[in-house]
Length: 302
Image 1 (spheres, helix red, strand yellow):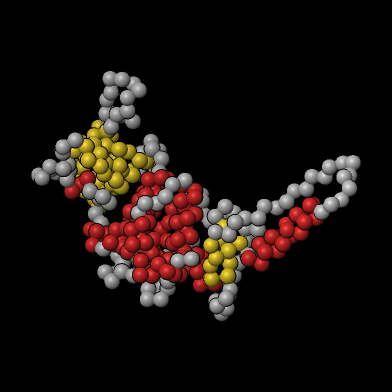
Image 2 (tube, one colour):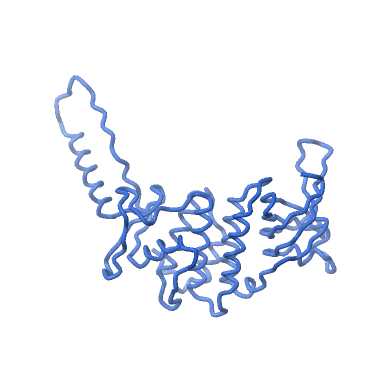
């Protein structure tokens, strides 16, 4: 990489630097995550002011920083910026903005530096466009599109939860939409959905084996090593409709929803949130905004 290079990137995070500068974290197609100083961006008449905003896509000319001490980290500087695209619709509703920041947080954890990140860049922009295109009368459609985006980001990272098969038996799971009492388990540690009948059978077998092992018998002249199948912890339980929603998320387009009644999307988002936080090893802070915005429907979350 030369001292000055050109990239296309979307701003994901900003922080103040000194009295008038900004540090901008940018996801670029060519070199992944970069952090660069936007000199004077906080001044009233700065040309970089609007171009350094969140979710602004720019064609950038970046100048690499220099340091007299090799061990001292340096920051690049934005020399030129030409805006290609903006998402003004994301800031016109708290739900859309919170969902966009939620996706950006995940991307910041997934993206690599000094490596091309074209797929991640395009996937994020695709889901930001979908969120922006939602009507102003925001409802649970925002949560549905958020869950769709999270699932696709997990898939790109190779962390997709298993939702088509039981993680214990490897048998396909088909939700019975005619049975209001039909349920399936979801285990974060096991990596996806679990047939509750198979899980309960395994639990009973382990309990029986434990009783037999603890029963008073004479000590044999040899030791027998027995391997027991691990019983995964059930993190959540889903009904047939919620599993159907979860299984549909692998598709390119989100399923048609009735925003007035599909509260199951809150459960689906909550399960994906826990699963994502488990694999990222950190909480998704923007999720608290989602909880606040949809507090009226939050009782539907398992």
